[in-house]
Image 1 (spheres, rainbow, N blue to C red):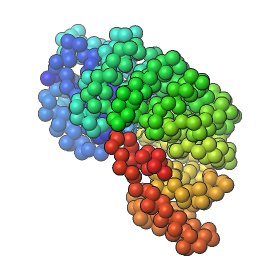
Image 2: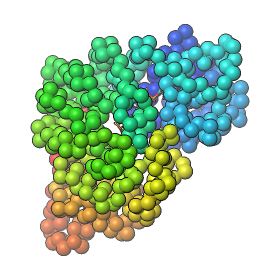
Image 3: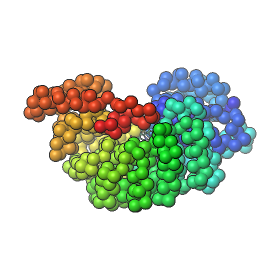
Image 4: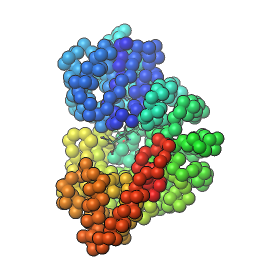
Length: 490
Ligand code: B12
Ligand code: SF4
């Protein structure tokens, strides 16, 4: 074995699709290439020891925002104990602004962008010459038909225990300035029939949750319909053996044909992640996000009323021009549309993204280390931003967890944002914690807060008891995430 592909995933359940693409495309070098994944939080010495146990000549690291800090330590240690091992980096986190990155300084080579064809080529040159002269290589984007699909490389163990990521297209045609995909020129589809044949064999091998990483599933409706039909056929052929598909959607593009397809799916089989990000037209213009807000709202309403899909809708706080008040208006508007989950994200400055053009005018201040979260801007000072961060954390615990289905509407009343912000401020003042709040304690705190707000003790306890009983997830023989099962059971 001479080449090792490795990365630190965010969790064990997240299998790396990027590395499987590289392995699938190694050509003649595939025989001598292995894949070994780690999880962030693992001990650096153990990672280095396990890498070296393969006695590799080349180690290729997949570098992402969630692992760059730890990977830097791993590469530094690896180069100390085994300086002869050639380190090649790749992945989105090192594809831009790479010259200033510590990890790039420590490595021998870097491939920016797509690695599918450039990594095997570079490895061939390192192993057999001529020795590559340049340190940094721009990854070649070949025609999609030339990229070998990696799905057979998911092991039976992966299929049984991990999220199966799949990709029907790469890239995004939109230009939202906070997003790395804004740098893509367009979206490039893989040949659909070939892709679906691979999905067929994954399904035959037991895969039941397919998570599409496509930036925009509903870009080409013909393709979306064919993919949905694939899953519908599976569901119809065997209703007792459900299959789940997760897609990212743009909210303002849901033609009737797509709606008709969506409406045929049973409870929970479709999971949609929908980016709203901001309902504020001035902010949308500033960050070059084109979105018809009325259509988006109508479509989310339609999905809530007429489909069985589980909906997770994203908002971002901290965007240039977004004040707390305008964010609150957007949040309340979204809450009124009743999605299952609102993902309250805080703006991050991803390397390479054009959002930095607003730095001066809007006073954007970001954390210097990954994940580069915004700390303050012209309209939201640091303490207020921290209140929003806590709001996001508590929202996840209380609202998105699905554990407080009956209590939440009472807690939020007619002003979801304002009331939850007041609750978040109170909870923080009374617990001093945003993490590791045990469920029992959280229930007790919510109960106390409701009483502080004037609710009768018995009524508050009864309300929470109704949730606590309902909070127990119904037995689901599915790989669907637990909290989604709770939301759907509510
Ligand atoms: C799955 C995923 C996750 C998973 C983690 C997966 C894992 N393995 O652990 C989860 C859900 C946890 C996650 C979380 C986040 N994510 Co994410 N995520 C993705 C997603 C949807 C898919 C990744 C993927 O498989 N892509 C498909 C493969 C084929 O592409 P690829 O990974 O880029 O690999 C190619 C190249 O990069 C390169 N390459 C990769 N590895 C290597 C190695 C070598 C040696 C070489 C040469 C080349 C190379 O070659 C590959 C093939 O061409 C991408 C979006 C996307 N569609 O890519 C975002 C993305 C990677 N995430 C992103 C972000 C910002 C986040 C969050 C910060 C979001 C947030 N606001 O909270 C969090 C991070 C949380 C944290 N702890 O810090 C950004 C990346 C930013 C960065 N610089 O890394 C992306 C690109 C989304 C975007 N458009 O902005 N994410
Ligand atoms: S936010 Fe979504 S639509 Fe906008 S560029 Fe990124 S992936 Fe594309």
